[in-house]
Image (cartoon, rainbow, N blue to C red):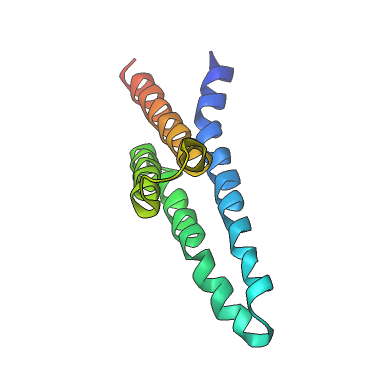
Length: 118
């Protein structure tokens, strides 16, 4: 039972970091559009969502409900931001992993809550 609890505890945290790294990859398109010192502010602007998610993931490390809320809101925000006129796979590539991570944070919160009760 202890092994399952470790997997449930660590999976949303590790997947959060992997997801943030995945999102950060999209920021590298600035290297094809900008030259010289103009790359630095453009790269920073493109990395703002990843930086915000990283800060919130650090907070979620101790507070699973924060992680659940953040990743559910990130999934919903992405769908609303890009609109409803794309193919379903467009949404599944970003919102899908965010929803899964949110669910894992919820499961982790439930497990910790149940361990404290019993």
